[in-house]
Image (tube, rainbow, N blue to C red; front, side, top):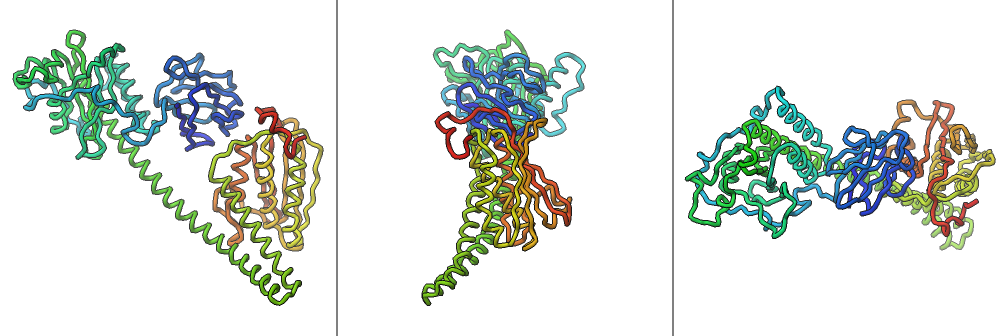
Length: 556
């Protein structure tokens, strides 16, 4: 199952788990729906083909870019590839990958690590220490050196961009196989210094895996790298007396005359893994510069592991802090609601005990008002806390507005606030009726709370702007207004200018709903003159819900 992680753009941080079939990316699709206005409605397509995934541009206005290059024809994707759609940057993963090393388990019987014990000195043709100052490659003077620099640059770009270490390692292996002559490539990893190394990735140049012949790696060479933390270049292993054993099944005998590079992956001064690759000396012999390149790759991989662990720790701490802040904020607000509810029930209870209908009636508005507050809070929390797939249908927006106004009329009457509306004749708007109703009601409630008692006036106006292709609903209050330095954060969750009277989530929920429907919500405010919210609904024919569902409330 392919996965897309959004690194940049309005949907930053979002993850899309796509089905194992052709998937559309764009503004008007419920498969990979982007709220990025610079993306086309049907911008690009992920298409499966013979075990691979292709990215196809669908004649988008701004083009689709893969790793910085414009996609002009169907192009094969690899784990870690970066797809730019409008102003959004997405990272492709071929399957659902976890954050740890064990996202894709390699069968243990694919790798033979049996080997003799003993020193490896005479077999080592070259060794490079993996300290930070030892991985500097010489400035490019030849084509090979330039290619090596390009490889290091591509791997460095992946740090922080790949969604998991597993994806990073697989992408690095792809790059290594593209750059070096390799018969077998093995990546061994271990989560901690006391854990055993286990095969994590196994690649072979040949595609003929009939008979499931094992890929052989010498434990003697690997143990030497683990002990010294040096990257080593080995050759003629079979002829080295100190690698000879009496066991004819030893992996060194199976290696034969091969050129081998083995380098450690070091993170936080711990060896977290090994890169081991080899080729037949009859085809190629690795050089010391290629060893230095491999050591640099191992070091960069260590940096990627450290970066991933720091990001995971930061995200975990931020989530804990955000959870604590949210619980404290909501607990305080819910307590205020319950206190109001308790006051109302006390008055009702006294009236019932005394058989005093007037006393009972005086307490009921308190109960009703606080029940409505609890309901509104619950709806906004549900809207804000999870992604919604809008049920898009053609509706008459004025009907939604009239219904929302009727529901908030009692609140306005309690504060002696006038609700004035001027609704022009509008074309049908494709949007989610339930979501639009909730967003409009949230803005109206916010305007009522902002308006002064007995002198408050709220003007509600709808109009159609054919030049921009939007139906615009404007809601203006004559409250104190919002200072310019506070305007930017009014749609942030749990930010409220009402003190104890607001949850700080109503406007955030309204903004999220409008984004999900590919609409817009703008605000204008002048201190001491009031605030105006503009809700813009795009009059554009997008994919509607099934015809059986298009006859519900609000359908024209």
